Image 1 (tube, one colour):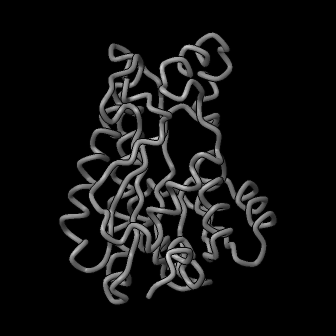
Image 2 (cartoon, rainbow, N blue to C red):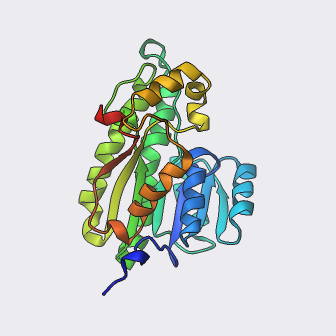
Length: 253
């Protein structure tokens, strides 16, 4: 009989985390490494990735790249696989929110948001699926948002991509889960990151957001660990195509 206590053990697995230089991506890389995975952090800022590698140790490699550069996907695939082999797990934490009001959205801001938040998770996943399929095991974790289902001021481009992530996740599951590759998404509530700095710097606004949750507080980075490890491990082998809201019950009210 399998020991349920080993379900979250990622020893022997290789994980790629985009957006690993800061925020939720950085925390994801740390959590996966702590669970036994060899982790490849991907982001544009090499110095921040090197700090992450120094914190984690020999089980972490750094790849500086822009995941939104579609022409660079093949080179990125090779770079990510160079040290530990092709990843079994990919976590798409890279993202941008221009916070442009609908009347002020620019073509540049729109294209940048679509490319990083929606296009990159698909094409990078597509690049790694063949190796996962060959092993008969893979985990894809996208990052959704409160704006996957809610409309926020200044979030029309960001919200469109995050609604798209919900459907992309379901479509990935339909396409690839028969090969042992699950695809799910985490929908964070309000967590203190670079992306939400404007929210948390306004203490009244942060307090209002906390009051809107069932838990009565905003998230901490540690709140991400359990849900992430669940979706990246054998514990979730029969869970696919789902968006797991990690929001303290914000969307329940």
